[in-house]
Amino acid sequence: MNNEKKFIYLMGVIALFFALVYKLVNFVIYSKDMKFVSISITLLNILLMIIITVIILSSIVSYLILKGKKISRNIMKINLNIVNGMYPLIIITTKIFSIPKNDIRKVYVILNNNYIYSNKYNFKAEDIMLITPHCLQKNFCKYKVTNDIDNCRQCGQCNVQDLVKLKQKYNVKAFVATGGTLARKIIIENKPKAVIAIACERDLTSGIQDVSKFHVIGILNKRPNGPCFNTEIDIEKVEEAIKFFLGGN
Image 1 (cartoon, rainbow, N blue to C red):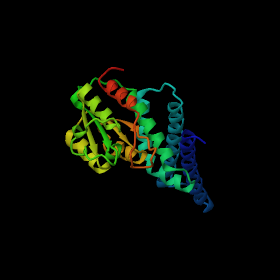
Image 2 (image 1 turned 180 degrees about the vertical axis):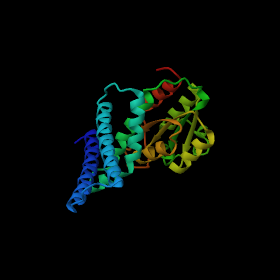
Image 3 (image 1 turned 120 degrees about the horizontal axis):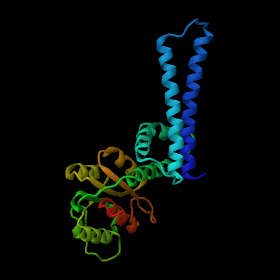
């Protein structure tokens, strides 16, 4: 089962859960031979039906987005807000069905990026920020770039050099953070209009949600040596995101 199917499967499970709650509520009510349903119970039933309908519609929209179908950006925005609201419950459900959390996080990043790419932007270069975790730098390098990415000597042994070149080529801001907390602090303090964030699934998902007022494109890093150690990135995707925010796409 691919990641998209896992995501839709979990959405369906959640919808089924609320449907069972709806049936249970009504079973309890009518098993007591109630002649009428109180206003509070009626409102509860209406609420449950709305929740079930919203989840089903969100599942359909998410499926179409993941399959590359053309969807209105307004609908994509609404759907992303729904997924954000449901996200904690989705993650809880992954534990029940032993589905890796990262599989669902990847889908979340895709849904977010598709929404961002459905819009049009024309930001100035200084309003665009690149941010990446420090594990992109080789662990043996003595020229630490967490305080200043320009400390990179551009030896070519890691992708930090590539980020420095993009920074110089497009005149965008670029930072290296030691963790998700610092990354969010850097973003909030610098107040960019657009962020291109490079990280693992967990940090990207939580970061996108925590700085939701900014326009964020998430790019997953590559981990040939395991998590948080000498990671790599697809530099072409980073440059593509820069061009997009500059109004090039």
